[in-house]
Image 1 (cartoon, rainbow, N blue to C red):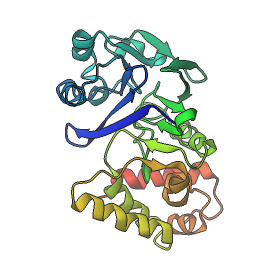
Image 2: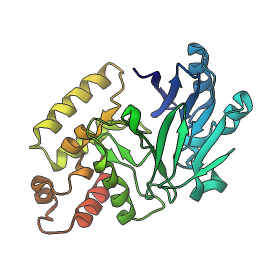
Image 3: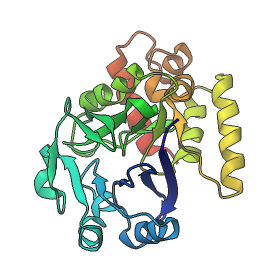
Image 4: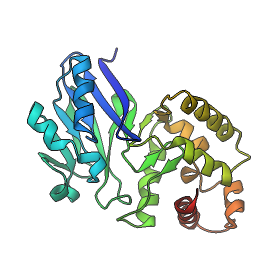
Length: 257
Protein backbone atom coordinates (compact mmCIF):
# COMPACT_ATOMS: atom_id res chain seq x y z
CA UNK A 1 0.00 0.00 0.00
CA UNK A 2 1.41 3.38 -1.03
CA UNK A 3 1.92 6.10 1.56
CA UNK A 4 2.19 8.79 -1.12
CA UNK A 5 -0.52 11.40 -1.66
CA UNK A 6 -0.43 13.60 -4.77
CA UNK A 7 -2.35 16.82 -4.18
CA UNK A 8 -2.90 18.92 -7.29
CA UNK A 9 -4.42 22.41 -7.51
CA UNK A 10 -4.61 25.41 -9.83
CA UNK A 11 -2.57 28.51 -9.07
CA UNK A 12 -1.74 31.74 -10.87
CA UNK A 13 -4.16 31.52 -13.82
CA UNK A 14 -3.58 28.09 -15.36
CA UNK A 15 -0.49 26.63 -13.65
CA UNK A 16 -0.81 23.34 -11.85
CA UNK A 17 0.56 23.24 -8.33
CA UNK A 18 1.46 19.72 -7.19
CA UNK A 19 2.43 18.55 -3.72
CA UNK A 20 3.74 15.04 -3.07
CA UNK A 21 3.39 13.95 0.54
CA UNK A 22 4.62 10.75 2.11
CA UNK A 23 2.43 9.97 5.11
CA UNK A 24 5.04 7.62 6.59
CA UNK A 25 8.11 9.89 6.54
CA UNK A 26 6.39 13.29 6.46
CA UNK A 27 8.47 14.32 3.45
CA UNK A 28 6.66 16.76 1.16
CA UNK A 29 7.84 17.90 -2.27
CA UNK A 30 6.43 20.57 -4.54
CA UNK A 31 6.83 19.92 -8.26
CA UNK A 32 7.94 23.40 -9.35
CA UNK A 33 6.98 26.47 -7.34
CA UNK A 34 4.72 28.74 -9.38
CA UNK A 35 3.16 30.61 -6.44
CA UNK A 36 4.71 30.60 -2.96
CA UNK A 37 1.64 32.01 -1.21
CA UNK A 38 -0.75 29.45 -2.67
CA UNK A 39 1.63 26.55 -2.08
CA UNK A 40 2.11 27.69 1.53
CA UNK A 41 -1.66 27.90 1.99
CA UNK A 42 -2.19 24.41 0.59
CA UNK A 43 0.52 23.06 2.90
CA UNK A 44 -0.99 24.77 5.94
CA UNK A 45 -4.47 23.44 5.14
CA UNK A 46 -3.08 19.90 5.20
CA UNK A 47 -0.64 20.27 8.06
CA UNK A 48 2.33 19.44 5.84
CA UNK A 49 5.83 20.91 5.91
CA UNK A 50 7.68 21.40 2.63
CA UNK A 51 10.98 19.50 2.47
CA UNK A 52 11.82 19.58 -1.26
CA UNK A 53 11.11 21.36 -4.54
CA UNK A 54 11.59 19.46 -7.79
CA UNK A 55 12.14 22.08 -10.49
CA UNK A 56 11.59 21.18 -14.14
CA UNK A 57 12.83 24.38 -15.83
CA UNK A 58 13.73 28.00 -15.24
CA UNK A 59 10.62 29.89 -16.45
CA UNK A 60 9.33 32.34 -13.88
CA UNK A 61 5.94 30.71 -13.53
CA UNK A 62 7.73 27.55 -12.35
CA UNK A 63 10.42 29.00 -10.06
CA UNK A 64 8.94 32.26 -8.76
CA UNK A 65 8.17 30.73 -5.37
CA UNK A 66 11.53 29.02 -4.82
CA UNK A 67 13.26 31.53 -2.60
CA UNK A 68 10.24 32.46 -0.48
CA UNK A 69 9.44 28.81 0.18
CA UNK A 70 13.07 28.05 0.97
CA UNK A 71 13.14 30.90 3.50
CA UNK A 72 9.92 29.70 5.08
CA UNK A 73 10.60 25.97 5.21
CA UNK A 74 14.33 25.47 4.63
CA UNK A 75 13.44 23.06 1.83
CA UNK A 76 16.03 21.59 -0.56
CA UNK A 77 15.66 22.58 -4.21
CA UNK A 78 16.49 20.14 -7.00
CA UNK A 79 16.64 21.23 -10.63
CA UNK A 80 18.31 21.05 -14.02
CA UNK A 81 22.09 21.41 -14.00
CA UNK A 82 22.00 22.96 -17.47
CA UNK A 83 19.92 25.85 -16.09
CA UNK A 84 21.60 26.13 -12.69
CA UNK A 85 22.29 29.87 -12.96
CA UNK A 86 18.60 30.50 -13.65
CA UNK A 87 17.06 28.37 -10.88
CA UNK A 88 16.73 30.44 -7.66
CA UNK A 89 17.99 28.68 -4.54
CA UNK A 90 19.15 25.55 -6.38
CA UNK A 91 20.85 23.02 -4.09
CA UNK A 92 21.16 19.87 -6.20
CA UNK A 93 21.89 19.84 -9.91
CA UNK A 94 20.35 17.08 -12.01
CA UNK A 95 20.83 15.89 -15.58
CA UNK A 96 19.11 13.33 -17.78
CA UNK A 97 20.02 9.80 -16.70
CA UNK A 98 20.45 10.74 -13.04
CA UNK A 99 18.49 8.99 -10.32
CA UNK A 100 17.93 9.88 -6.69
CA UNK A 101 15.99 8.60 -3.70
CA UNK A 102 13.21 10.57 -2.05
CA UNK A 103 10.99 9.27 0.77
CA UNK A 104 12.12 5.74 0.00
CA UNK A 105 11.33 6.03 -3.71
CA UNK A 106 13.59 6.15 -6.71
CA UNK A 107 13.13 9.04 -9.13
CA UNK A 108 14.64 8.98 -12.61
CA UNK A 109 15.53 12.20 -14.40
CA UNK A 110 14.63 12.60 -18.08
CA UNK A 111 16.43 15.17 -20.22
CA UNK A 112 13.75 17.13 -22.09
CA UNK A 113 15.34 20.00 -24.05
CA UNK A 114 13.06 21.96 -26.35
CA UNK A 115 10.74 24.16 -24.32
CA UNK A 116 13.88 25.37 -22.57
CA UNK A 117 17.42 24.21 -23.24
CA UNK A 118 17.83 22.32 -19.97
CA UNK A 119 14.28 21.20 -19.14
CA UNK A 120 14.02 17.96 -17.17
CA UNK A 121 11.19 15.67 -16.09
CA UNK A 122 10.92 13.33 -13.10
CA UNK A 123 9.71 9.73 -13.39
CA UNK A 124 8.69 7.85 -10.23
CA UNK A 125 8.24 4.22 -11.36
CA UNK A 126 7.08 2.84 -8.02
CA UNK A 127 4.10 5.19 -8.02
CA UNK A 128 3.50 4.98 -11.79
CA UNK A 129 3.73 8.73 -12.32
CA UNK A 130 5.80 11.21 -14.29
CA UNK A 131 6.12 14.96 -13.73
CA UNK A 132 6.59 16.43 -17.19
CA UNK A 133 6.60 20.18 -16.56
CA UNK A 134 6.01 21.99 -19.85
CA UNK A 135 7.35 19.27 -22.15
CA UNK A 136 4.31 17.02 -22.53
CA UNK A 137 0.77 18.20 -21.82
CA UNK A 138 -2.47 16.28 -21.96
CA UNK A 139 -3.34 16.32 -25.69
CA UNK A 140 -0.39 18.59 -26.47
CA UNK A 141 3.23 19.54 -25.90
CA UNK A 142 5.10 22.68 -24.94
CA UNK A 143 6.14 25.47 -27.26
CA UNK A 144 9.73 25.34 -28.44
CA UNK A 145 11.41 28.46 -27.07
CA UNK A 146 15.09 27.63 -26.58
CA UNK A 147 15.74 24.23 -28.11
CA UNK A 148 15.05 22.88 -31.57
CA UNK A 149 12.05 21.05 -32.97
CA UNK A 150 14.24 17.96 -33.36
CA UNK A 151 15.14 18.11 -29.66
CA UNK A 152 11.50 18.57 -28.70
CA UNK A 153 10.47 15.57 -30.79
CA UNK A 154 13.03 13.41 -28.98
CA UNK A 155 11.98 14.79 -25.60
CA UNK A 156 8.30 14.07 -26.23
CA UNK A 157 8.88 10.69 -27.86
CA UNK A 158 10.70 9.25 -24.84
CA UNK A 159 7.44 9.38 -22.87
CA UNK A 160 6.13 6.67 -25.19
CA UNK A 161 8.48 4.22 -23.51
CA UNK A 162 6.87 4.62 -20.10
CA UNK A 163 4.26 2.06 -19.01
CA UNK A 164 0.78 2.97 -20.32
CA UNK A 165 -0.65 3.18 -16.78
CA UNK A 166 1.84 5.92 -15.84
CA UNK A 167 -0.01 9.03 -14.66
CA UNK A 168 1.05 12.17 -16.50
CA UNK A 169 1.25 15.33 -14.38
CA UNK A 170 2.01 18.46 -16.38
CA UNK A 171 2.61 22.15 -15.72
CA UNK A 172 -0.58 23.78 -17.03
CA UNK A 173 -4.31 23.28 -17.50
CA UNK A 174 -4.26 23.52 -21.30
CA UNK A 175 -6.24 20.39 -22.17
CA UNK A 176 -9.38 22.03 -23.55
CA UNK A 177 -7.54 24.22 -26.06
CA UNK A 178 -5.23 21.31 -26.90
CA UNK A 179 -8.28 19.16 -27.61
CA UNK A 180 -9.63 21.67 -30.12
CA UNK A 181 -6.37 21.61 -32.02
CA UNK A 182 -6.11 17.82 -31.87
CA UNK A 183 -9.60 17.48 -33.33
CA UNK A 184 -8.65 19.80 -36.18
CA UNK A 185 -6.01 17.33 -37.38
CA UNK A 186 -7.57 13.99 -36.37
CA UNK A 187 -11.36 14.40 -36.19
CA UNK A 188 -11.96 10.73 -36.94
CA UNK A 189 -10.23 9.56 -33.76
CA UNK A 190 -13.06 8.22 -31.59
CA UNK A 191 -10.94 8.10 -28.42
CA UNK A 192 -10.02 11.74 -28.99
CA UNK A 193 -13.63 12.80 -29.49
CA UNK A 194 -14.61 11.04 -26.27
CA UNK A 195 -11.73 12.64 -24.39
CA UNK A 196 -12.59 16.11 -25.75
CA UNK A 197 -16.21 15.74 -24.60
CA UNK A 198 -15.04 14.61 -21.17
CA UNK A 199 -12.68 17.58 -20.92
CA UNK A 200 -15.44 20.02 -21.86
CA UNK A 201 -17.59 18.57 -19.10
CA UNK A 202 -14.83 18.82 -16.52
CA UNK A 203 -13.96 22.41 -17.39
CA UNK A 204 -17.63 23.46 -17.43
CA UNK A 205 -17.74 22.64 -13.72
CA UNK A 206 -14.29 24.04 -12.93
CA UNK A 207 -12.64 20.66 -12.47
CA UNK A 208 -9.10 19.77 -13.50
CA UNK A 209 -8.42 17.55 -16.50
CA UNK A 210 -5.15 16.08 -15.24
CA UNK A 211 -3.51 13.78 -14.48
CA UNK A 212 -3.88 11.90 -17.71
CA UNK A 213 -2.09 8.63 -18.44
CA UNK A 214 0.56 7.75 -20.98
CA UNK A 215 -1.77 5.14 -22.48
CA UNK A 216 -4.50 7.71 -22.97
CA UNK A 217 -2.07 10.18 -24.53
CA UNK A 218 -0.83 7.55 -26.97
CA UNK A 219 -4.43 7.20 -28.17
CA UNK A 220 -5.25 10.90 -28.38
CA UNK A 221 -2.26 13.28 -28.31
CA UNK A 222 -1.30 14.30 -31.87
CA UNK A 223 2.31 14.98 -30.86
CA UNK A 224 2.65 11.31 -29.90
CA UNK A 225 0.78 10.19 -33.02
CA UNK A 226 2.98 11.37 -35.90
CA UNK A 227 2.42 8.02 -37.59
CA UNK A 228 -1.36 8.52 -37.80
CA UNK A 229 -2.54 8.29 -41.41
CA UNK A 230 -5.34 10.76 -40.71
CA UNK A 231 -2.99 13.35 -39.21
CA UNK A 232 -0.52 12.94 -42.05
CA UNK A 233 -3.31 13.38 -44.60
CA UNK A 234 -4.61 16.48 -42.83
CA UNK A 235 -1.13 18.00 -42.98
CA UNK A 236 -0.41 16.86 -46.53
CA UNK A 237 2.64 14.97 -45.30
CA UNK A 238 1.72 11.36 -46.03
CA UNK A 239 5.25 10.29 -46.97
CA UNK A 240 7.36 12.58 -44.80
CA UNK A 241 9.48 11.60 -41.79
CA UNK A 242 8.04 11.80 -38.29
CA UNK A 243 10.23 14.84 -37.63
CA UNK A 244 8.53 16.77 -40.44
CA UNK A 245 5.07 15.80 -39.20
CA UNK A 246 5.93 16.82 -35.64
CA UNK A 247 7.39 20.15 -36.78
CA UNK A 248 4.31 20.98 -38.84
CA UNK A 249 2.02 20.07 -35.95
CA UNK A 250 3.95 22.38 -33.65
CA UNK A 251 3.93 25.21 -36.20
CA UNK A 252 0.18 24.87 -36.70
CA UNK A 253 -0.47 24.69 -32.96
CA UNK A 254 1.56 27.89 -32.46
CA UNK A 255 -0.80 29.69 -34.84
CA UNK A 256 -4.01 27.95 -33.75
CA UNK A 257 -6.77 29.92 -32.10
